[in-house]
Length: 252
Image (cartoon, rainbow, N blue to C red):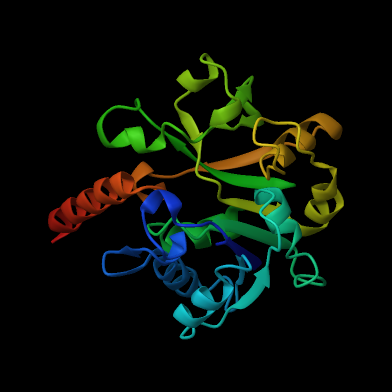
């Protein structure tokens, strides 16, 4: 069994909302609630850690009072790697593996969370999404990081803002859902730097660290694109809700 971290410190600027992004409603309730319900249904972690910011901590804590969660404040917004590092003290002496999800991915299922928990191995196991192209609703994935493989094996992840035009053509993308060996994670997370266009500590840099330093193999599990959808704008929200409404109609 794993311990789960949920990244939820982002603002709702692109959503044109005064709410923290993870509290923007999707299908009638805050998107982070969908994720927390899926985590509860998976049986993996009864008390996940939610990373919040000084600005949104009270709103998120109040909105999630019906859930058993531990809240950790990321005092400065210095990137996803920094956000996970903020949870280190809260997770000291925790289980063998640590899973990381984003609070703005409301469609991930309990089954997939359980699959990642049971199937994870090595230093890092991550979920990936394989697309046919970036047309139509799949354009929601265009600005995601690209999975870089060498000889079929994952060697790194290139964030969109740092990607060349050639790398942007890659159609395997990163939904940013990971399982880390906890000892390996804490030994290496301080090694990442801000040598990128955003000047942030990218959690994805751990992939390169793993393959470059000791030749650690990175494992992956491919999931269905609709399940992996994240929501960063009102346009993406509308597209995602239409897709899921259509899916629900087909399943009836």
